[in-house]
Length: 404
Image (cartoon, rainbow, N blue to C red; front, top):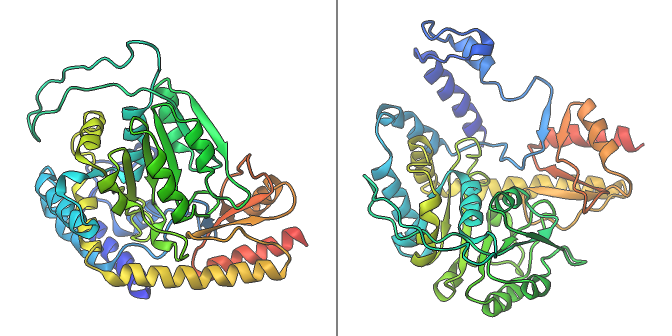
């Protein structure tokens, strides 16, 4: 993985020092002035010196070297729309997941997939609120079917990944939060009991708890959900899950017309800043999503990097190993101090600090360590991303000082 880091710095320094120009008003850089490599490195530094970022569940090791080379090569075709390259990625993802091409939809990160699902499948239950709307033909990409507005509430766990909640609220949909069980899994039966059209969102492994909902419960739940209620399963962290009680539900899509599964290249593939994700669903569900999506929402750099990443098996296996080893080191150290974590099936941990977490989060920030925000449903827990070993040693040192 050292190769990835050195290659990343070297390649980007070469690209930025090769005459690329960049204008930012607040930095006083002129469009007419070539950006020097030294200025570029300073401008593109993501974090101030000495700050450790363990707040966003990012992959600290970065993209595959193969992906970095693909992005470099793609500079020459950045003047073109990404249609053909998107087709290549869709074909690769269809093969990987054992589905047809028309069951894959690319998104600007899985975040866009979540937004599309909220827009397409939630909304007011007032009479006449979901009358079909005829759409104009598109100049590229074929015709769109009649648009049917979403209808019904959004049902989510509490706590869970929060971005999708506001998308539903913007759609004038009711949002119902169902507390996690005592084992931090989704309370699927309570979510099922509340279903009335709309959308049920299940993040598995869940963010922020890093916990899973067991595969047997998921299978039984999906068999019971009414077909007019859609289910979105967010598998952003599935590569990190190694429990025998966990499984992806993508193979279940073929028998469930109301199931959509979201995936991302942001986590194990280290592409959080590039924004590329996708979903798997039956074609009829895809047709409900497409009218809400901006054309070519995934850029050609992200598409080529994602396609190349799929060819690098080491990216996944090395990422899993490094995360597993470093996570064990951190949880063992915290355990020796008397602080337990929710069993983690992701690249972050949720630590019970046995007191109000907000002051500890603030104290860590003062020491240059950024961790996750507070979560009202778990006020005594800290969410900490698993970074590189030296970063986690810095976190532990600061944490010891605070709790001493």
